[in-house]
Figure 1 (cartoon, rainbow, N blue to C red):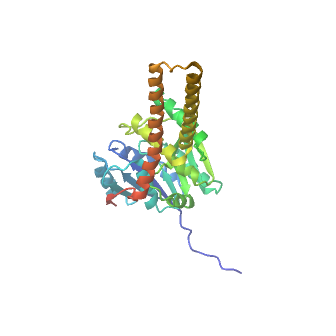
Figure 2: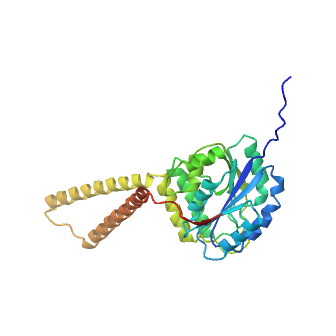
Figure 3: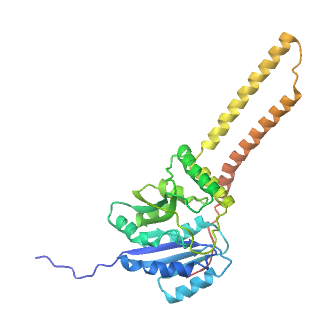
Amino acid sequence: MGELSCQPQTKKLLTIVVPLHNEEGTIEIFYHTIQKILPKLNVEISFYFIDDGSSDHTLVILKQLAKLDSRIHFISFSRQFGKEAGIYAGLQHAKGDYVVVMDVDLQDPPELLPKMLADVQSGDYDAVATRRIDRIGEKKLRAWFAKRFYNWMNRISQTEFIDGMRDYRVMTRQMVDAILALPENQRFSKGIFTWVGFRTKYIPLSNHQRIAGRSSWSFWELFKYAIEGIVAFSTVPLTIVTVVGLLSSGLAVLSMLFIIIRALVSNSSVAGWPSMVTIILFIGGIQLLSLGIIGRYVAADYMEAKRRPIYIVKEKC
């Protein structure tokens, strides 16, 4: 008869990564809320709060919580490096067999976590993520542009962008390691999460309002973030510039032939200085726009070539 092993099976570890910036009013609410959910998870728990250079009392509160709960760890940046840097730092330091990324403002409902983790643990999926099915409470203009962004990205990029996808997701260690293997400095996680592949299930949810405080994402910040996503996951704008350049050159040749033929036939010069000035300004505008698009790609390449760190740690626990 074979011997039975008496060694107890150790529980898997789930690391909860929470990037935040100036969230002194939400941290404790988030912590106490998620404590009600943790007993439903058949795993060990650790937290990694990533302080993105907050100027309020965010770091002070994190230090207080870390003294009360040994499962809590934090990393504080030397300045604000952005949410993408916060997500990357959290994934780098997470040691869990499973890793979940979620916001501290409870727009990512903690009550979904048991179901999300169970689906990943079943082995049917490598990740379970969330996507918003509405934008109730957001400004109409902002919601309209967000909808157009996902539609456009799916047209110009080979990487799939799920409409309304959020960063809130549970991932296996294998998927996290694959994400960390991408060394790029200019990061766009919504694209990276889908680019690496792996079987992912999306759970639809309604838009939730923040429990406290204000979002640091202004319309301008979101616009710049969208531009970064386009540059990171599509070269179609460069193709458009090339096509526009070819069309402009073709029209210029046709105009030149028209002027020459008209001068030979009627022996008169072409009148219409206002129209000529308009055409010159139009062509000049196209050239400047084209240079701007090309310059954005060159700038991204320039930032990558310098190989600066994605973030700098000031304090950690």
